[in-house]
Image 1 (cartoon, rainbow, N blue to C red):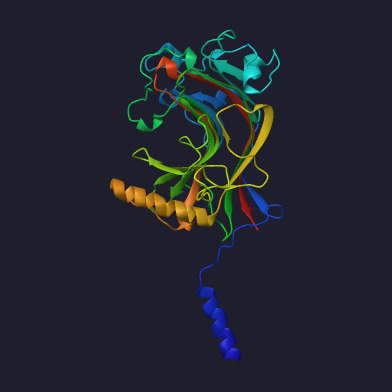
Image 2 (image 1 turned 30 degrees about the vertical axis):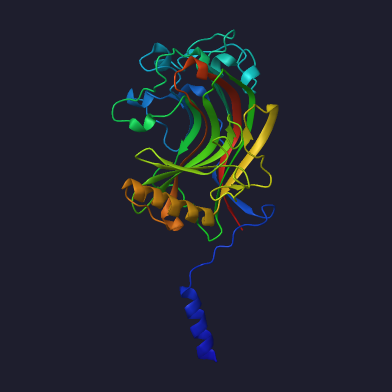
Length: 357
């Protein structure tokens, strides 16, 4: 009997650990991966070309990156956050800054309250944005990328961003670990023209495969300016030739009624908003990535990469680390004056955790 008991124990040691997903977030534990630091705009609000002018992104620090706020080759683009903005941008972003402090915490190219020129705010743990394509020079709708930096492609956007690098924390440290992103968000202003461009807001995490070095972006959608089900509210896998992107709304079920395969909506979180602003109220958003969802994501990404003839990534969640995190608002704009859109909002206390039992 003693021998049999010993044998059973030794055999159990070789069995894989079973992952039991968290089913009660009220009693779950949260280990901090990134707390919201207090930062200001002097060195932490960075335009897209700064890193090519001798200014490096801060290592291991939170910063606010502003990109594509203007047409290629224009002064407006290259000076998108060069100047002080003194008008009350908080009327449109929800981040109120008193008149004396605005000179320190608000930036843009122009300082024009009458037409609502694009403006960006960064004050301690909060950031605000007003992206207004009505004020762009309408030429092409293209974006300008420095040589050798094709991944800068995308629409006009602003993002609170933090990079951990290749040695970032393991995502699934225990069998029931979950990557958790959360933010308090306001979206008091959305205005569009006849055929509006698409505005989207999401939290994201870039994940790195330790076996191949490949990056994978996980996006949890907070807002989409399209009507629900009209091109949004469903899961999506895309690829820009360098990075695979997996996105899904912060909702329990997708627009097609199926369970969400990639994002778990916290019971304490608001659900993804659609079409219109949600007024002056502040909403709390929290999204979880479970091990089972990571498995789904990696299998589906490899199917997509196989079709494209790309290198496959590891399908073992234990091989992945957290490379970077962020929260962003982006506009898919084509340059047509009839597709203009303006979006104003703000975030505070964007943070990342490992949820576990």
